[in-house]
Image (spheres, each protein chain N blue to C red):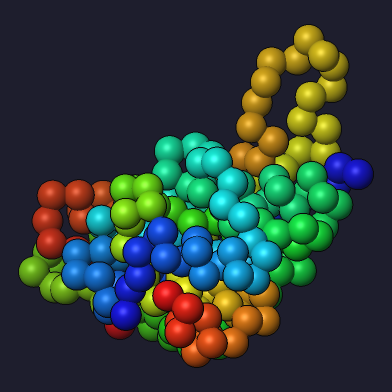
Length: 73
Length: 147
C-alpha cells in the first residue's frame, strides 16, 4: 500500500529523522543525526503518494522493522 | 575529506504495483529508490536522488558504496534481464514492459573547485548510459521492454 509523503515523514520523525528542504526539482531528503541521508522523490510535495518499494528501501537502509514502521503510517 | 568516486551503478525500473501509472526505479548498488510517471522520468529522478545522496555522503566523509544495497530480488531481476533481455530499441511497440535495466555512470572529481574563482559546478556528475537500453521509443508510445 502506498502512503502519503506527509505520513511517511511523520512516521520517520518517530525514528529521529527530519525532512530537509527540497534539493533540485523534486528530491527531498530524510536525515537523522549521524546517519546517511535518504532521498525521496515527491512531485506533489507532501501530498505525493510514496510507493511501498520506497518504504521498504527506507526501512532496510536503516534497519527499521517494516511492519512496525507501517503501523505508524 | 574529499575522495574521488568513479563507478557504474546498476538500476532496475518496474511499474509501481501499488501506484497505477507510476514507475519505480531502484539503484541496486546504493539501495536508493525513486519514481516517475514514465521510465525516463524514473531514471532522471533516480539520477537526481543518487547525486544528492552521494554528495551528502562525501560531505560527511562516508563512502556511498557502503550503503545497504537493494534487496536480492532486484539483483536477480537485473542479472536475468541483462543476460537474456532484449534492448529496448529492438522491442516492438505493442509489447508491454515489465522491467527495464541499465547503468548510471557516476563521477565525482577529487577537487570540484580548485580555487575560489572556479565556477560553481555540481560536485557529482551523472550520466545515464542508454546506448544499450535505448528509451527513445518509449517517449510517445506505451512502455515497452521485456522480462
